[in-house]
Picture 1 (tube, rainbow, N blue to C red):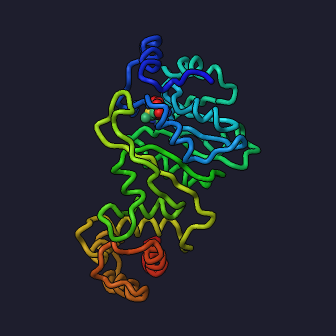
Picture 2 (cartoon, helix red, strand yellow):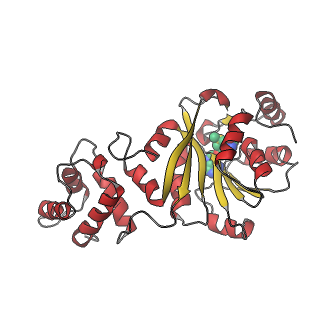
Picture 3 (cartoon, rainbow, N blue to C red):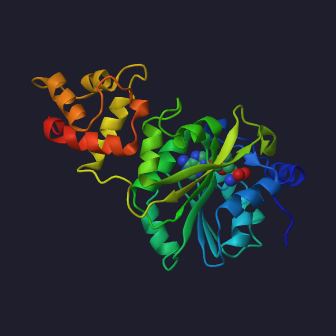
Length: 294
Ligand code: SAM
């Protein structure tokens, strides 16, 4: 087996060889601990038949571990300066395809059709750039791609919000958005010391397993998400007050919101953070005839 990229010595060697300087604006904190990488890959349950999608391979630390465990790795990297580095560090692996692109602008569906066409099992495994964690996850979840799930590193605070359950202070519209598409859990907490340079925040790896069917069937998904966002707009306000400010005006708005809430058995004085995804689903459908498209 080849020497790991992710040791402090080898990483420094590679960075010096290419005169590479980190760009904070691109969330470049590289992993320098092979044990963490092995753990991340284990959580993904890859087989020799699996495909892996990576966002931001950096100098290839995680990519090489994925290349050893999966049949093929497709990695999207925004920073052009890393392309020659990756060509060098990943030269022992024939099963890696690097795509030079901003993941948020990439046509991921077409890339998957071209690169992972016959793969029955595809996982997203990444140490995400923290400045765009949520947009990346939401893009890859909402585009209805043929993937089993995600094992991704992010800042711990975001991981706590994503995996939060009703009634906790971290629970919010992000928890519900992710819950709508999959089951999420924290796989491990990661200390700052395994990164170069060390980030200012704590990190965690989460695992999301996509649902075959969403846990609630709603009339209109966009409206459902709009209602959940509005319900958490000001956390100290009641759901009635938040909806009153969030929904576009109309005649007897307050009365119509109270009517919808009561028809779902939801006390208007409750706060958004106490509602389950099922309650939000019911509520969105009850509000829909009154408030959609006004
Ligand atoms: N995977 C490497 C590791 O674990 O050592 C690097 C992870 S580093 C946290 C994030 C990587 O994402 C960097 O290589 C950065 O250049 C890349 N990146 C940042 N924004 C990106 C974007 N919008 N699309 C694709 N890659 C991006």
